[in-house]
Image 1 (cartoon, one colour):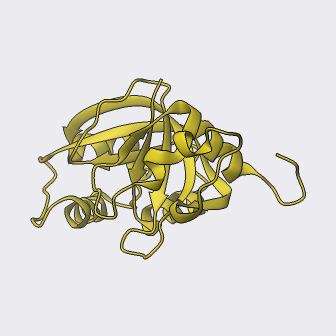
Image 2 (tube, helix red, strand yellow):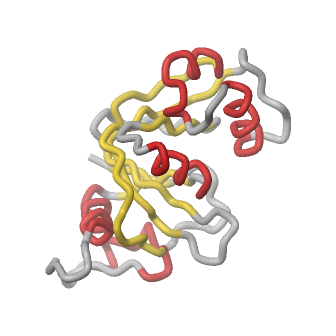
Image 3 (cartoon, rainbow, N blue to C red):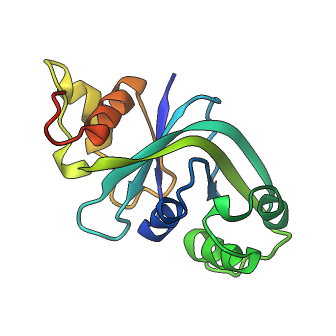
Length: 172
């Protein structure tokens, strides 16, 4: 099964950490179909020199609906405190026009949301063993302007997750 790295803002990611959410809604205007139970990694640092993978979760649902229906179903799991704030955030992240409550948006409902202990900077991803270059080749070449996110191998996702959850003083 493939995994996926989705681009998000530090603000969206930090919102969920502050709320202590273990489930989140990752919304997008460019849906890439993923299977349920796919690992979903979060890439933050948009617009920064070096971006970083800051956590992960597991896809439970992939759908498209109106902004209003999304808010009514998930509320602040969408990363906002009101439907008005959500519409503004979606507008700023996905288009150059103001999104309305009746406009369509796609989303991934992600369970087991876990922030990493160690952020994994894309410029310094390392793997173990002889095939580390193969495992991380697609991640390392993540284009700076990539806006849709990126599919990666489950093997690469598992290695990134292992490094991200590693606690100082433990052995990998």
